[in-house]
Length: 376
Image 1 (cartoon, rainbow, N blue to C red):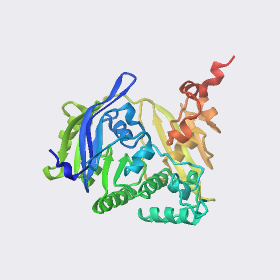
Image 2: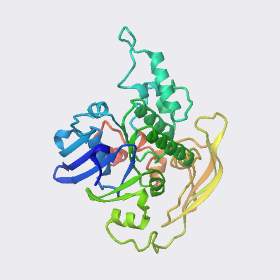
Image 3: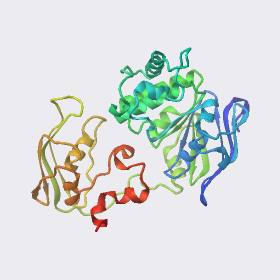
Image 4: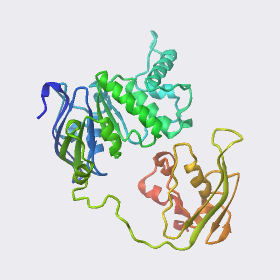
């Protein structure tokens, strides 16, 4: 049982329902002072729902249970209320305003004003620069966010949260788009913030990160609090995974028997221009094959050209050279329409930016690529 005098956050009996579905079932836990707490579980376990309640994205009026911050009951109707209570959250999906600058994104909602009540742009740029320097990043804060890589956009989101000087920082899968070097740097920053008095809730599927960084682990499953583990008692990965999935784990990576057929797709001597460095290629003379019934993985660090290969094959971006063969026959793909005709589809890296049109309904999003089949 935790000592309530050392709890910065206490959750008691929180339940959240969505149109008859119970996403959280009477969940209770605490976050202690100077602590990094991991909340882990499978997809759908309720982790993100809990964090959206804490960040004010889901109003308290639609939530059962009680939230205590520094011993005082807290109720949030929106994210501004949560921010005023000292909670900042980094969401799993990037939520920057892509057509604003880095400086504007970091100060958005808390723009420094001069004595005339106008935006003090010099103070905006300094606030943004200082926030980024806390993360060890030196960059022109006038750059438009749309021009940044996903990993840099994530770091800008983190800098924006830190610029509010929160007492509780929630990070939902913060390293999903970061390189190993950036991840290590972020973990060092989080540890440093903890030493300065910040308490963190850390959500990640990467157990090695969790074991290295977090002082305590709470396991969620099917919307319920399942168990708690502390670093002092040692983390047992097999036990924790079994609690996450709700069954014994006999084999970590079971062998799946399946047959691989003949060659389906062949890419030869593919070269793709670099998106930012004029006159250079990000992909140079790459060749590979894909067989029927096969799953082919393309691995590499952020910026290594994985996405550019797939987008060039799909016709989403221009290629400088290269040949494509489908079932042994040479094909010409100049645009996504050509790729579709050959039975090739692409699930984009950035779903929010390139995968959907947010202003349209689910119905229209799901059918927009086959309008020619639906129209007479």
